Image (cartoon, rainbow, N blue to C red; front, side):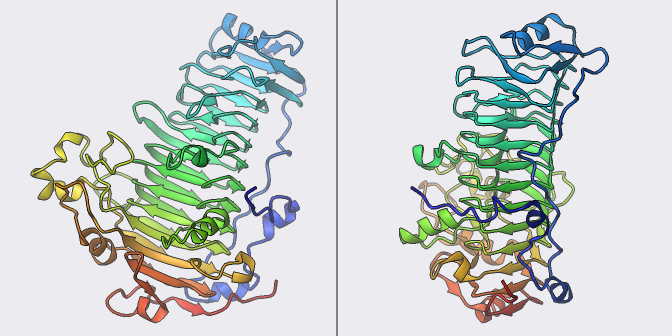
Length: 506
Protein backbone atom coordinates (compact mmCIF):
# COMPACT_ATOMS: atom_id res chain seq x y z
CA UNK A 1 0.00 0.00 0.00
CA UNK A 2 1.42 3.38 -0.97
CA UNK A 3 1.74 5.86 1.87
CA UNK A 4 -0.10 9.08 1.06
CA UNK A 5 -0.12 12.37 2.98
CA UNK A 6 -3.55 13.27 4.32
CA UNK A 7 -2.67 16.06 6.73
CA UNK A 8 -4.98 18.73 5.40
CA UNK A 9 -7.79 16.75 3.79
CA UNK A 10 -9.76 16.53 7.02
CA UNK A 11 -8.87 19.98 8.32
CA UNK A 12 -11.66 22.24 9.59
CA UNK A 13 -12.82 24.89 7.17
CA UNK A 14 -11.05 27.62 9.13
CA UNK A 15 -7.74 25.85 8.60
CA UNK A 16 -8.35 25.49 4.89
CA UNK A 17 -8.94 29.22 4.70
CA UNK A 18 -6.22 30.46 6.98
CA UNK A 19 -3.29 28.06 7.14
CA UNK A 20 -0.61 29.39 4.82
CA UNK A 21 2.39 27.67 6.29
CA UNK A 22 4.02 31.09 6.71
CA UNK A 23 3.52 31.94 10.34
CA UNK A 24 5.73 35.00 10.04
CA UNK A 25 3.53 36.46 7.29
CA UNK A 26 3.97 40.06 8.44
CA UNK A 27 7.73 39.81 8.30
CA UNK A 28 7.50 38.03 4.96
CA UNK A 29 5.85 41.02 3.32
CA UNK A 30 8.83 43.16 4.25
CA UNK A 31 11.45 40.89 2.78
CA UNK A 32 12.72 40.84 -0.79
CA UNK A 33 10.98 38.01 -2.53
CA UNK A 34 8.02 37.96 -0.16
CA UNK A 35 4.98 36.21 -1.57
CA UNK A 36 1.38 37.31 -1.32
CA UNK A 37 -0.83 35.91 1.46
CA UNK A 38 -2.56 32.62 0.73
CA UNK A 39 -5.81 32.79 -1.25
CA UNK A 40 -9.01 31.97 0.58
CA UNK A 41 -10.34 28.74 -0.86
CA UNK A 42 -13.15 26.95 0.97
CA UNK A 43 -14.06 23.28 0.62
CA UNK A 44 -16.88 22.40 -1.79
CA UNK A 45 -17.28 18.61 -1.57
CA UNK A 46 -19.99 17.76 0.91
CA UNK A 47 -21.07 21.38 1.19
CA UNK A 48 -22.31 22.13 -2.32
CA UNK A 49 -25.10 24.72 -2.32
CA UNK A 50 -28.59 23.19 -2.46
CA UNK A 51 -30.62 23.47 -5.61
CA UNK A 52 -34.18 24.75 -5.93
CA UNK A 53 -36.64 22.91 -3.69
CA UNK A 54 -39.47 23.63 -6.14
CA UNK A 55 -39.47 23.56 -9.93
CA UNK A 56 -38.85 26.96 -11.55
CA UNK A 57 -41.70 28.36 -13.62
CA UNK A 58 -42.00 26.48 -16.90
CA UNK A 59 -39.59 23.71 -15.92
CA UNK A 60 -40.23 20.06 -16.78
CA UNK A 61 -40.27 17.89 -13.64
CA UNK A 62 -38.29 14.64 -13.74
CA UNK A 63 -39.42 11.77 -11.51
CA UNK A 64 -36.74 9.52 -9.96
CA UNK A 65 -39.25 6.67 -9.66
CA UNK A 66 -39.44 6.35 -13.46
CA UNK A 67 -36.34 4.71 -14.90
CA UNK A 68 -35.10 6.66 -17.92
CA UNK A 69 -37.45 9.58 -17.29
CA UNK A 70 -34.71 12.19 -17.73
CA UNK A 71 -33.51 10.87 -21.09
CA UNK A 72 -37.06 10.37 -22.37
CA UNK A 73 -38.26 13.85 -21.43
CA UNK A 74 -35.10 15.40 -22.89
CA UNK A 75 -35.82 13.68 -26.18
CA UNK A 76 -39.45 14.81 -26.33
CA UNK A 77 -38.90 18.45 -25.27
CA UNK A 78 -37.74 21.37 -27.43
CA UNK A 79 -34.32 23.04 -27.20
CA UNK A 80 -33.92 25.48 -24.33
CA UNK A 81 -36.03 23.44 -21.90
CA UNK A 82 -35.30 23.61 -18.18
CA UNK A 83 -35.51 20.25 -16.37
CA UNK A 84 -35.95 20.03 -12.60
CA UNK A 85 -34.92 16.72 -11.07
CA UNK A 86 -36.81 15.82 -7.93
CA UNK A 87 -35.02 14.64 -4.79
CA UNK A 88 -33.94 11.02 -5.08
CA UNK A 89 -31.81 8.73 -7.21
CA UNK A 90 -32.46 9.04 -10.94
CA UNK A 91 -31.50 6.16 -13.23
CA UNK A 92 -31.11 5.61 -16.95
CA UNK A 93 -32.16 2.52 -18.83
CA UNK A 94 -29.85 -0.42 -18.01
CA UNK A 95 -27.95 -0.29 -21.28
CA UNK A 96 -24.27 0.65 -21.31
CA UNK A 97 -24.85 3.35 -23.94
CA UNK A 98 -28.00 4.82 -22.42
CA UNK A 99 -27.41 8.52 -21.74
CA UNK A 100 -29.01 11.95 -21.71
CA UNK A 101 -28.50 13.77 -25.01
CA UNK A 102 -29.36 17.43 -24.38
CA UNK A 103 -30.63 19.89 -26.95
CA UNK A 104 -29.12 23.33 -27.37
CA UNK A 105 -29.69 25.59 -24.40
CA UNK A 106 -31.13 22.92 -22.12
CA UNK A 107 -30.64 23.31 -18.37
CA UNK A 108 -30.71 20.56 -15.74
CA UNK A 109 -31.36 21.63 -12.15
CA UNK A 110 -31.22 19.24 -9.24
CA UNK A 111 -33.44 19.62 -6.20
CA UNK A 112 -31.69 19.08 -2.85
CA UNK A 113 -30.66 15.42 -2.81
CA UNK A 114 -31.05 14.82 -6.56
CA UNK A 115 -28.59 12.19 -7.85
CA UNK A 116 -28.08 10.73 -11.32
CA UNK A 117 -26.57 7.28 -10.74
CA UNK A 118 -25.05 5.14 -13.48
CA UNK A 119 -25.11 2.06 -11.22
CA UNK A 120 -21.71 0.98 -12.63
CA UNK A 121 -23.63 0.08 -15.79
CA UNK A 122 -24.03 3.19 -17.96
CA UNK A 123 -20.90 4.64 -19.55
CA UNK A 124 -22.05 8.23 -20.04
CA UNK A 125 -24.39 10.59 -18.22
CA UNK A 126 -24.63 13.56 -20.63
CA UNK A 127 -23.39 13.42 -24.22
CA UNK A 128 -24.01 14.83 -27.68
CA UNK A 129 -22.92 18.00 -29.42
CA UNK A 130 -25.58 20.50 -28.30
CA UNK A 131 -24.16 23.83 -27.22
CA UNK A 132 -24.80 25.99 -24.17
CA UNK A 133 -26.11 23.30 -21.85
CA UNK A 134 -26.20 23.97 -18.09
CA UNK A 135 -25.99 21.44 -15.26
CA UNK A 136 -26.48 22.80 -11.75
CA UNK A 137 -26.97 21.37 -8.25
CA UNK A 138 -26.82 17.77 -9.42
CA UNK A 139 -24.74 14.81 -8.25
CA UNK A 140 -23.55 12.52 -11.06
CA UNK A 141 -21.95 9.29 -9.91
CA UNK A 142 -21.00 5.69 -10.63
CA UNK A 143 -20.76 5.86 -14.43
CA UNK A 144 -18.11 3.75 -16.17
CA UNK A 145 -16.64 5.77 -19.02
CA UNK A 146 -13.75 4.04 -20.82
CA UNK A 147 -10.16 5.18 -20.47
CA UNK A 148 -9.61 8.74 -21.79
CA UNK A 149 -13.37 9.31 -22.10
CA UNK A 150 -15.68 11.27 -19.83
CA UNK A 151 -19.06 11.03 -18.14
CA UNK A 152 -20.45 14.59 -18.28
CA UNK A 153 -20.21 16.40 -21.64
CA UNK A 154 -18.80 13.21 -23.08
CA UNK A 155 -18.55 14.69 -26.61
CA UNK A 156 -16.84 17.94 -25.51
CA UNK A 157 -19.61 20.24 -26.74
CA UNK A 158 -19.09 23.99 -26.49
CA UNK A 159 -20.46 26.49 -24.04
CA UNK A 160 -21.50 24.16 -21.23
CA UNK A 161 -21.86 25.49 -17.69
CA UNK A 162 -21.32 23.15 -14.75
CA UNK A 163 -22.09 24.81 -11.41
CA UNK A 164 -22.63 23.55 -7.85
CA UNK A 165 -22.41 19.99 -9.14
CA UNK A 166 -20.81 16.90 -7.61
CA UNK A 167 -19.22 14.51 -10.09
CA UNK A 168 -17.81 11.55 -8.22
CA UNK A 169 -16.93 7.85 -8.18
CA UNK A 170 -16.93 7.48 -11.97
CA UNK A 171 -14.51 5.64 -14.24
CA UNK A 172 -12.56 7.60 -16.83
CA UNK A 173 -12.92 11.37 -16.48
CA UNK A 174 -15.76 12.83 -14.49
CA UNK A 175 -16.06 15.68 -16.94
CA UNK A 176 -14.89 16.56 -20.45
CA UNK A 177 -14.57 20.12 -21.75
CA UNK A 178 -15.46 22.17 -24.79
CA UNK A 179 -14.82 25.76 -25.82
CA UNK A 180 -16.17 28.48 -23.52
CA UNK A 181 -16.94 25.94 -20.83
CA UNK A 182 -17.43 27.19 -17.27
CA UNK A 183 -16.90 24.86 -14.32
CA UNK A 184 -17.63 26.65 -11.06
CA UNK A 185 -18.13 25.76 -7.39
CA UNK A 186 -18.28 22.05 -8.14
CA UNK A 187 -16.85 18.92 -6.52
CA UNK A 188 -14.84 16.66 -8.83
CA UNK A 189 -13.73 13.78 -6.65
CA UNK A 190 -12.63 10.17 -6.63
CA UNK A 191 -12.95 9.61 -10.36
CA UNK A 192 -11.02 6.77 -11.96
CA UNK A 193 -8.74 8.79 -14.23
CA UNK A 194 -9.30 12.57 -14.14
CA UNK A 195 -11.64 14.96 -12.42
CA UNK A 196 -11.80 16.72 -15.79
CA UNK A 197 -10.18 15.95 -19.14
CA UNK A 198 -10.06 19.20 -21.15
CA UNK A 199 -9.69 17.63 -24.56
CA UNK A 200 -11.68 18.26 -27.73
CA UNK A 201 -11.15 16.69 -31.14
CA UNK A 202 -9.62 19.27 -33.44
CA UNK A 203 -7.85 21.02 -30.55
CA UNK A 204 -10.36 23.86 -30.55
CA UNK A 205 -11.01 24.58 -26.87
CA UNK A 206 -10.97 28.34 -26.25
CA UNK A 207 -11.91 30.41 -23.24
CA UNK A 208 -12.08 27.73 -20.54
CA UNK A 209 -12.86 28.79 -16.95
CA UNK A 210 -12.33 26.50 -13.95
CA UNK A 211 -13.16 28.46 -10.82
CA UNK A 212 -13.82 27.77 -7.17
CA UNK A 213 -13.94 23.99 -7.40
CA UNK A 214 -12.69 21.25 -5.12
CA UNK A 215 -10.78 18.67 -7.16
CA UNK A 216 -9.68 15.76 -5.03
CA UNK A 217 -8.88 12.05 -4.92
CA UNK A 218 -8.89 11.53 -8.68
CA UNK A 219 -7.04 8.78 -10.53
CA UNK A 220 -8.39 6.06 -8.29
CA UNK A 221 -7.49 3.67 -11.12
CA UNK A 222 -3.77 4.50 -10.65
CA UNK A 223 -3.28 4.63 -14.41
CA UNK A 224 0.40 5.56 -14.44
CA UNK A 225 1.17 2.23 -12.79
CA UNK A 226 -1.17 0.31 -15.05
CA UNK A 227 0.30 1.98 -18.15
CA UNK A 228 3.75 3.32 -17.22
CA UNK A 229 4.60 6.55 -19.00
CA UNK A 230 1.06 7.08 -20.29
CA UNK A 231 0.90 10.68 -19.02
CA UNK A 232 -2.80 10.10 -18.51
CA UNK A 233 -3.63 11.04 -14.92
CA UNK A 234 -4.26 13.95 -12.62
CA UNK A 235 -6.84 16.14 -11.03
CA UNK A 236 -7.32 17.98 -14.35
CA UNK A 237 -5.59 17.38 -17.69
CA UNK A 238 -5.56 20.12 -20.35
CA UNK A 239 -4.76 19.36 -23.98
CA UNK A 240 -4.33 22.10 -26.60
CA UNK A 241 -6.44 24.65 -24.73
CA UNK A 242 -6.01 28.21 -25.97
CA UNK A 243 -7.00 30.61 -23.19
CA UNK A 244 -7.83 29.28 -19.72
CA UNK A 245 -8.47 30.85 -16.32
CA UNK A 246 -7.87 28.40 -13.48
CA UNK A 247 -8.55 30.25 -10.25
CA UNK A 248 -9.68 29.79 -6.70
CA UNK A 249 -9.67 25.98 -6.77
CA UNK A 250 -8.66 23.59 -4.02
CA UNK A 251 -6.77 20.79 -5.78
CA UNK A 252 -5.64 18.18 -3.30
CA UNK A 253 -4.90 14.52 -2.64
CA UNK A 254 -4.99 13.45 -6.28
CA UNK A 255 -2.99 10.36 -7.23
CA UNK A 256 -0.56 11.91 -9.66
CA UNK A 257 -0.31 15.56 -10.67
CA UNK A 258 -2.81 18.14 -9.46
CA UNK A 259 -3.06 20.19 -12.68
CA UNK A 260 -1.39 19.03 -15.89
CA UNK A 261 -1.33 21.12 -19.08
CA UNK A 262 0.07 18.91 -21.84
CA UNK A 263 0.70 19.69 -25.50
CA UNK A 264 0.22 23.06 -27.18
CA UNK A 265 -1.73 24.81 -24.47
CA UNK A 266 -1.42 28.59 -24.51
CA UNK A 267 -2.46 31.66 -22.55
CA UNK A 268 -3.17 30.17 -19.12
CA UNK A 269 -3.75 32.11 -15.92
CA UNK A 270 -3.39 29.88 -12.89
CA UNK A 271 -4.00 31.99 -9.81
CA UNK A 272 -5.35 32.02 -6.26
CA UNK A 273 -5.48 28.23 -6.01
CA UNK A 274 -4.52 25.97 -3.14
CA UNK A 275 -2.64 22.94 -4.49
CA UNK A 276 -1.71 20.45 -1.80
CA UNK A 277 -0.94 16.85 -0.93
CA UNK A 278 -1.03 15.60 -4.52
CA UNK A 279 1.09 12.47 -5.04
CA UNK A 280 2.95 14.07 -7.94
CA UNK A 281 3.66 17.63 -9.04
CA UNK A 282 1.17 20.29 -8.05
CA UNK A 283 1.38 21.73 -11.56
CA UNK A 284 2.89 20.48 -14.80
CA UNK A 285 3.11 22.76 -17.85
CA UNK A 286 4.39 20.66 -20.74
CA UNK A 287 5.11 21.43 -24.42
CA UNK A 288 3.00 24.57 -24.06
CA UNK A 289 3.25 28.35 -24.19
CA UNK A 290 2.65 31.65 -22.38
CA UNK A 291 1.25 31.41 -18.85
CA UNK A 292 0.89 33.40 -15.64
CA UNK A 293 1.14 31.36 -12.43
CA UNK A 294 0.61 33.61 -9.42
CA UNK A 295 -0.76 33.93 -5.90
CA UNK A 296 -1.08 30.20 -5.37
CA UNK A 297 -0.49 28.34 -2.11
CA UNK A 298 1.32 25.10 -2.94
CA UNK A 299 2.19 22.74 -0.11
CA UNK A 300 3.06 19.12 0.66
CA UNK A 301 3.02 17.95 -2.95
CA UNK A 302 5.07 15.24 -4.65
CA UNK A 303 5.87 13.34 -1.45
CA UNK A 304 4.89 10.01 -2.98
CA UNK A 305 6.48 10.30 -6.41
CA UNK A 306 9.47 12.28 -5.12
CA UNK A 307 10.26 9.68 -2.46
CA UNK A 308 9.70 6.88 -4.94
CA UNK A 309 12.24 8.36 -7.36
CA UNK A 310 14.79 8.90 -4.58
CA UNK A 311 14.37 5.34 -3.37
CA UNK A 312 15.19 3.99 -6.81
CA UNK A 313 18.29 6.20 -7.07
CA UNK A 314 16.95 8.53 -9.75
CA UNK A 315 18.83 11.84 -9.61
CA UNK A 316 16.34 13.81 -11.72
CA UNK A 317 14.97 16.86 -9.82
CA UNK A 318 11.27 15.95 -9.75
CA UNK A 319 9.50 19.22 -9.12
CA UNK A 320 6.42 20.71 -7.56
CA UNK A 321 6.05 23.10 -10.49
CA UNK A 322 7.40 21.29 -13.52
CA UNK A 323 7.88 23.35 -16.69
CA UNK A 324 8.75 20.87 -19.41
CA UNK A 325 9.57 22.06 -22.93
CA UNK A 326 7.37 25.11 -22.37
CA UNK A 327 8.06 28.81 -22.53
CA UNK A 328 7.07 32.28 -23.52
CA UNK A 329 6.62 32.86 -27.23
CA UNK A 330 5.80 36.41 -28.42
CA UNK A 331 4.71 35.17 -31.86
CA UNK A 332 1.75 33.29 -30.35
CA UNK A 333 -1.02 35.70 -29.24
CA UNK A 334 -1.74 35.62 -25.50
CA UNK A 335 -2.16 37.90 -22.49
CA UNK A 336 1.55 37.48 -21.77
CA UNK A 337 4.59 36.65 -23.87
CA UNK A 338 6.41 34.60 -21.23
CA UNK A 339 5.82 32.15 -18.43
CA UNK A 340 5.73 34.21 -15.26
CA UNK A 341 5.72 32.47 -11.88
CA UNK A 342 5.37 34.92 -9.02
CA UNK A 343 3.89 35.66 -5.58
CA UNK A 344 3.36 31.99 -4.83
CA UNK A 345 4.00 30.28 -1.50
CA UNK A 346 5.58 26.84 -1.84
CA UNK A 347 5.86 25.11 1.51
CA UNK A 348 7.17 21.67 2.39
CA UNK A 349 6.93 20.17 -1.06
CA UNK A 350 9.42 17.52 -2.15
CA UNK A 351 11.19 20.07 -4.38
CA UNK A 352 10.69 23.45 -5.99
CA UNK A 353 10.58 24.46 -9.65
CA UNK A 354 12.24 22.54 -12.46
CA UNK A 355 12.71 23.97 -15.96
CA UNK A 356 13.44 21.08 -18.30
CA UNK A 357 13.99 20.32 -21.97
CA UNK A 358 14.40 16.92 -23.50
CA UNK A 359 16.94 17.44 -26.26
CA UNK A 360 15.57 14.43 -28.16
CA UNK A 361 11.93 15.57 -28.04
CA UNK A 362 11.00 17.71 -31.00
CA UNK A 363 8.59 17.68 -33.89
CA UNK A 364 9.01 14.56 -36.06
CA UNK A 365 11.29 12.86 -33.54
CA UNK A 366 10.54 9.35 -32.29
CA UNK A 367 11.12 10.75 -28.78
CA UNK A 368 8.12 13.05 -29.12
CA UNK A 369 5.58 11.34 -26.90
CA UNK A 370 2.81 13.52 -28.37
CA UNK A 371 2.82 11.37 -31.49
CA UNK A 372 2.04 13.23 -34.69
CA UNK A 373 1.90 16.63 -32.98
CA UNK A 374 4.12 19.55 -33.90
CA UNK A 375 4.72 22.95 -32.33
CA UNK A 376 2.29 25.82 -32.77
CA UNK A 377 4.93 27.54 -34.90
CA UNK A 378 5.22 24.67 -37.41
CA UNK A 379 1.82 22.99 -37.82
CA UNK A 380 3.09 20.83 -40.69
CA UNK A 381 5.07 18.03 -39.03
CA UNK A 382 6.72 16.97 -42.29
CA UNK A 383 8.64 20.24 -42.50
CA UNK A 384 10.71 19.25 -39.48
CA UNK A 385 13.10 16.94 -41.26
CA UNK A 386 16.58 17.12 -42.64
CA UNK A 387 18.13 19.13 -44.08
CA UNK A 388 15.77 22.04 -43.28
CA UNK A 389 15.54 21.40 -39.54
CA UNK A 390 19.26 22.06 -39.12
CA UNK A 391 18.98 25.73 -40.10
CA UNK A 392 16.83 28.73 -39.09
CA UNK A 393 13.96 29.15 -38.68
CA UNK A 394 13.12 25.44 -38.33
CA UNK A 395 16.04 24.77 -36.00
CA UNK A 396 14.30 26.89 -33.37
CA UNK A 397 10.68 26.42 -34.34
CA UNK A 398 10.56 22.62 -34.57
CA UNK A 399 11.18 22.12 -30.86
CA UNK A 400 9.24 23.21 -27.84
CA UNK A 401 11.62 25.50 -25.97
CA UNK A 402 11.76 26.23 -22.27
CA UNK A 403 12.45 29.91 -22.61
CA UNK A 404 11.46 33.30 -21.17
CA UNK A 405 10.48 31.84 -17.79
CA UNK A 406 10.50 34.52 -15.07
CA UNK A 407 10.40 33.23 -11.46
CA UNK A 408 10.21 36.01 -8.87
CA UNK A 409 8.78 37.15 -5.55
CA UNK A 410 7.92 33.63 -4.44
CA UNK A 411 8.42 32.16 -0.98
CA UNK A 412 10.04 28.72 -0.82
CA UNK A 413 9.92 26.96 2.56
CA UNK A 414 11.33 23.50 3.27
CA UNK A 415 11.41 21.79 6.65
CA UNK A 416 13.01 18.38 6.13
CA UNK A 417 11.57 17.13 9.42
CA UNK A 418 8.10 17.65 7.92
CA UNK A 419 8.88 16.30 4.46
CA UNK A 420 11.03 13.55 6.01
CA UNK A 421 13.70 13.60 3.34
CA UNK A 422 17.46 13.66 3.62
CA UNK A 423 18.50 13.42 -0.03
CA UNK A 424 17.20 14.45 -3.45
CA UNK A 425 14.65 16.97 -2.15
CA UNK A 426 14.62 20.77 -1.89
CA UNK A 427 15.98 21.39 -5.38
CA UNK A 428 15.50 24.06 -8.02
CA UNK A 429 16.66 23.15 -11.50
CA UNK A 430 17.18 24.34 -15.04
CA UNK A 431 18.54 21.54 -17.20
CA UNK A 432 18.38 19.26 -20.22
CA UNK A 433 19.67 15.85 -21.20
CA UNK A 434 22.49 15.05 -23.59
CA UNK A 435 20.99 14.79 -27.07
CA UNK A 436 21.53 11.42 -28.72
CA UNK A 437 18.87 10.57 -31.32
CA UNK A 438 17.56 10.18 -33.95
CA UNK A 439 20.75 10.07 -35.97
CA UNK A 440 19.65 13.10 -38.05
CA UNK A 441 18.86 15.27 -35.01
CA UNK A 442 20.48 18.71 -35.05
CA UNK A 443 20.20 18.86 -31.22
CA UNK A 444 22.77 16.25 -30.26
CA UNK A 445 25.22 16.69 -27.44
CA UNK A 446 25.01 19.60 -25.00
CA UNK A 447 23.41 22.13 -27.33
CA UNK A 448 20.02 22.17 -25.65
CA UNK A 449 21.50 22.01 -22.13
CA UNK A 450 23.64 25.06 -22.88
CA UNK A 451 20.70 26.91 -24.42
CA UNK A 452 18.21 26.34 -21.58
CA UNK A 453 20.81 27.18 -18.95
CA UNK A 454 22.32 30.32 -20.39
CA UNK A 455 20.68 31.49 -23.60
CA UNK A 456 16.89 31.25 -23.31
CA UNK A 457 16.20 34.00 -20.76
CA UNK A 458 15.17 31.76 -17.86
CA UNK A 459 15.56 33.69 -14.65
CA UNK A 460 15.01 33.44 -10.88
CA UNK A 461 15.15 36.68 -8.87
CA UNK A 462 13.80 38.40 -5.73
CA UNK A 463 12.62 35.21 -4.04
CA UNK A 464 12.72 34.20 -0.37
CA UNK A 465 14.13 30.83 0.65
CA UNK A 466 13.89 29.08 4.01
CA UNK A 467 15.50 25.69 4.46
CA UNK A 468 18.30 23.62 2.85
CA UNK A 469 17.79 24.40 -0.84
CA UNK A 470 20.17 23.31 -3.58
CA UNK A 471 20.28 23.93 -7.30
CA UNK A 472 20.80 21.83 -10.42
CA UNK A 473 21.92 23.35 -13.71
CA UNK A 474 22.72 22.18 -17.21
CA UNK A 475 22.30 18.43 -16.49
CA UNK A 476 21.43 16.24 -13.47
CA UNK A 477 25.07 15.82 -12.48
CA UNK A 478 25.75 19.52 -11.93
CA UNK A 479 24.53 20.41 -8.42
CA UNK A 480 25.27 23.83 -6.92
CA UNK A 481 25.06 25.53 -3.57
CA UNK A 482 23.62 29.02 -3.15
CA UNK A 483 26.92 30.80 -3.75
CA UNK A 484 27.53 28.95 -7.00
CA UNK A 485 23.93 29.46 -8.12
CA UNK A 486 24.19 33.21 -7.64
CA UNK A 487 27.72 33.48 -8.99
CA UNK A 488 29.15 33.40 -12.49
CA UNK A 489 28.25 32.11 -15.00
CA UNK A 490 24.65 31.43 -13.85
CA UNK A 491 23.87 34.59 -11.87
CA UNK A 492 20.49 33.35 -10.68
CA UNK A 493 18.36 34.66 -7.80
CA UNK A 494 19.68 38.19 -7.75
CA UNK A 495 17.94 40.09 -4.95
CA UNK A 496 16.79 36.90 -3.22
CA UNK A 497 17.23 36.06 0.46
CA UNK A 498 18.28 32.73 1.95
CA UNK A 499 18.04 31.27 5.45
CA UNK A 500 19.34 27.76 6.15
CA UNK A 501 16.35 26.69 8.25
CA UNK A 502 12.61 27.10 7.82
CA UNK A 503 11.70 29.67 10.43
CA UNK A 504 8.65 30.28 12.59
CA UNK A 505 6.88 28.25 15.27
CA UNK A 506 4.89 25.15 14.30
